[in-house]
Image (cartoon, rainbow, N blue to C red; front, top):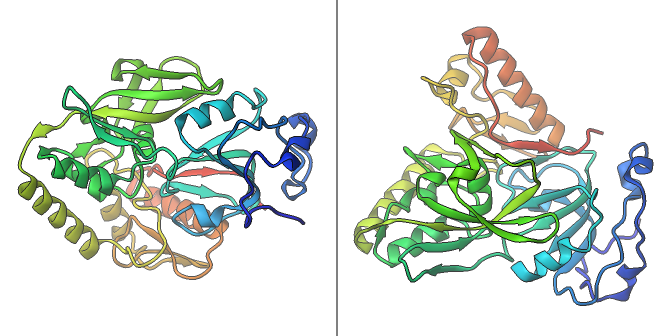
Length: 337
């Protein structure tokens, strides 16, 4: 099969403009590797990069899983808006940052992935003192930026292995702080390419849970965050301490997706998993980390199926032995082989 994945052809290549829209209903019964779903003709005004038949293992932190039909990496927010306006209304879309809470099944993913982490990277102090961070800004970079500007309260972002867009989408947090605790308002983009602003009142927000009240498909592209005045040296020391704690307690030397399960009310997922004797449990190349029970690591060429099967086994064992139902923090998408 021919692939443009490695060459990263620009969208002004007229070769891509030969694509014509096809019915997803007709495609549903076909194997994914036929790549039968295609985009509408692309505008030569787009400045981003379009790739076809992309191996998603390169774009998820587990380094496992299948391929996606197409991936678009926009040049910036304006280019992302222009790209979305070219798409059929029924084109499946998935926005991806660092891929640190994502598993793509081995059969792959239909539609288009929007790769945002290297495109939406604006980070600045606004006139009102808030920090504007686009969706592709990594948590550690945000924490360091706030410290540099003598702001306090952003340190916990250094402990989250993801970008602002994903952290907003799941209300990510650690060490007692959560993303929406410091979010004043957000910037979103709709399927039609419209850029809007919203506040917390537009969402149902809870622990690892963010749902828009309106029934509309849209993605976070930025946020205005409010922090307290502080001292740079104090914030830097807090970040250093937090990172040292991560290194000491988490298996950062192996591909992983951070915490796999949400903590159930009144307990901790890691404690429950460890109490069931599951540390070190392995299926194929996927293993419950002996260092931190709420991490599943890729110890050697794990398939997405290995990881998903281990997630399911951990859930079943913990529920049987403790009565607690563990719910994954990670998002699992795509088709099984």
